[in-house]
Length: 162
Image (cartoon, rainbow, N blue to C red):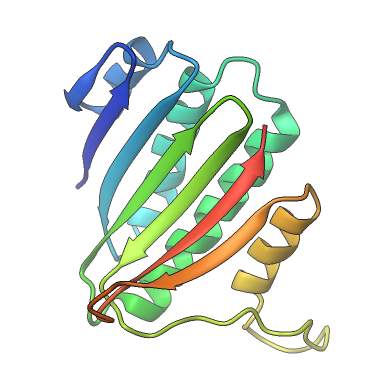
């Protein structure tokens, strides 16, 4: 279903998510995962990301982990919902440094999402990217949407302080 590639001080290469628990003891890492843009990928990607974050960022506070997992879930679900017809696969990237966790989801759909203003409480839909924006802003994080140079895809990137 997906490919993982980890780069840290100790390991580089393609490995299974279960094996990552042993390879991510360095305080800084980069994790990449390709997923199909179908509904089954949303929970599978969340589970894999949780294993990576728990194993790769010892001492990450539970609130930060929960926030990161909710953001990942929303970004992957948005990709499945909006980009699947033109992007059958997408990528999740997680990068940590001494001070932050960066979450990025990249797809090959040219449409650029916008953060909508807060909607009416009874409105249906349109809250995913707003939720991601608000979750990041609550902790002085950032949300950024960038088009690929060829304008045939995009990356949605969130940075959270650790």
